[in-house]
Amino acid sequence: MSAHDPVELAAARPDFAAIAAWIPQGASVLDLGCGDGSLLRYLKDTRKVRGYGVEISDANIVACISNGVNVIQSNLESGLSGFESSAFDFVLLSQTLQATRHTEPLVQEMLRVGNEAIVSFPNFGYWKARLNVLQGNMPVSDELPYQWYDTPNVHLCTLHDFEDFCKSHLVHILDRRVMTGDSEIRMLPNLLGSVAVYRFKRST
Image (cartoon, rainbow, N blue to C red; front, side, top):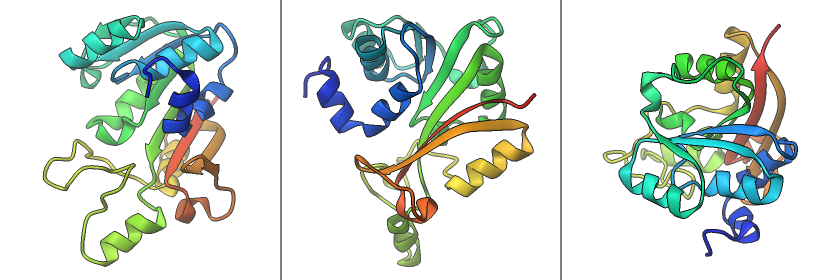
């Protein structure tokens, strides 16, 4: 796969297209835990966004530079104090929510720094994950590719868990898309969807 081909990127990561659909042309974006910069590159190519990625890995910093995206080396767990309030139109957290240790303050910081936030995460309520647990094993899948002993994931959740979190933390969900592969799941999403993407803002 070409690291710069938006069509191939969207095929490999359907949540990229779901995120892009909510972002208007030319918006300012901060991508937290941006990895190799693929999402930002995709949004630059398809939405002409302006923005930065935040990443801690040295190897990923090099990959971001190769991808032609602006990146800042920083640890998300230390907060976003270096960014002013409402500095960005959107703050993104793609497939990283489950690996954050201090999820609650990070979500609040996302909503301070951005007018809106978008997160995507693997749904632990997906039927295949439930079946693995019923069989006595932790799930291993395309969305959760790690073994229990080497996983970076510390806060796995279901759609219901995330929505309960938003309700109790005065977070207003604007939109939701649930997918398995490149198919959108509308019926029984907490059971049949493997990946969830949410767009939200602070409740007024």
